[in-house]
Length: 224
Image 1 (cartoon, rainbow, N blue to C red):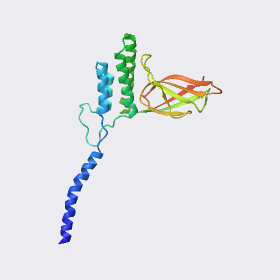
Image 2: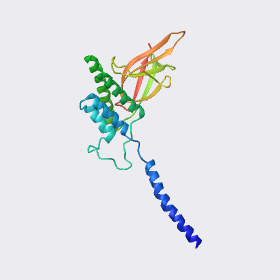
Image 3: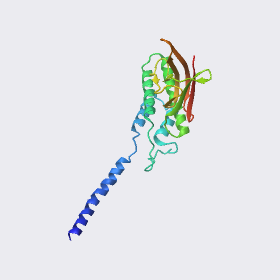
């Protein structure tokens, strides 16, 4: 009799634990939220003030997927992953540029900044359409003296906007040659430098490069 009671008690414990375990698995399996992506795209649309076709395309790809024209929720296990953090940061940068343009009194400067924002969104939309996702692109940067690669150069890059809005210049984590980066699609200026004898600094570049539209990007910076 005690054995039967113990067995019934074990079954009751299992009846409580199994649903709880299933609920725990459900919580863990929840995909990362797309809310930050939706928020920055909506803010960009509000700032631009018009129905930007490239932005509409980018929202379709990043939030719904290219084949989901009806915008129905995806089935379980097929949720769209959010873009990488650097990608969202670049969209935030577009938003900052757009907001800064709205504060400019000079009409020509304002239009130059907005044109750069439109171009950046268009490049991202085209890359997203081709590769089916928001992604960072593998970029290889080499420094060449003549035809020979030369090591030990520090690579810097900056998103190209306009003189009225200058984003911060970024530094590659490793020296050439080559230096490897993973950055969102866009148009960038790349350069490299190295300290020579004394206080003299050698330079390579700059080069204006469109990143995206291809699986990866190779850049060669000639040493001056």
